[in-house]
Image (cartoon, rainbow over all chains, first blue to last red):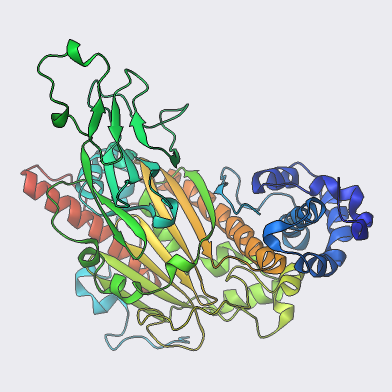
Length: 107
Length: 429
């Protein structure tokens, strides 16, 4: 089970379909800028199509493939910071600081 | 150059002569002895917000809070009668912590019908009464009625659950929160049940992080790289001026401009923000929540963006113009450490697009807060050198001056009550 068929072009990046913020943030920190850029370049142009697809479905009862597409969109949001502003995976000037998401929405 | 009007006194600070305008000492943030007094004087003698009613959705719902500064752990529980109660989290038999799972220092939540001590199996009902003693006949004249859980004062205000650890306290939360609380009491907090909560262990005194979030003077500089560069340069050129400041008793608030949701020029914001129509100030397309309560946007300014309320000692509420709010809590764990909690609350999304807009706001919050948190550790380390002992605060830092003065006053009042010799902390060196 992976992404909806209309988004087969994003299958090479299906490993970004991660359920929790902690997993998404860890994958971001564990990626090189080239990897983040490649993911962003593939997914960002598809964001509006993904929103249109997902908005046609009930948010509280998404099929599994749509849920994974939504998770991938969450990862795109996370990866947009290094690509659009930081030019590095980590937040600049955040050296020793950590911030864990301890509660997040179920979907 | 001033962009927004100041009060007739000439400055926000000089409206409150008791605050003074001279340099301040941060000895109150680097002295272990002083922190020990704060624990008693402040954290055992103030209303503390420990959560919201949505965390206790049904009978038997409970959660625990570790109040290290106040030297206790509390259980907050909704009883079979629907009432919310609070108890010290300690078994009356041999003092074992009553409610916890694998790690004694970690907070837990859940739903149960009674509390059972892991150690010897003593049981308490949800109203705190001791209901079962293992091998009761082995005890000497033990009357279970004498060994209920030790209650803690608890009160709910606009859905926020507060506890007070002084059993002799006679002030209500509403009275304690004063005019600033009353001005936002009718905000529809209870409709905003979509929650993102962050937690961080920060290597700085608890007051230093409140300082960081009670002024926006730092924002155009520390967070410069967060905006696209033209916008960033412009913001730094303007600097920061608040729309209004208010102080009432131990509490204060700052009202700030926004204007970024949506921005006048879409080129001011990042591509992801343009597509999702969201950012630091939240989703640009706001849910309808009806009329705002009178305490928000006190200057009635059309450029209003967010109001930050500092409720002493360690609770902040930020209400954002696009109809969502967030809370900050600062729980001291040592004179130079605390646990920070930042919690974002939105009206539940009706579509994936709305959900992603909230995600962007929540992720953006973390990017900013990581920079703030890291800077604090740098501040703590350097002020501990005592190479510099007096620091000038400007008019946009009025709430810092007020917070540190309030804390010093509470400590002094407590020591006067106890007849103790004051720990020597002056307003300025």
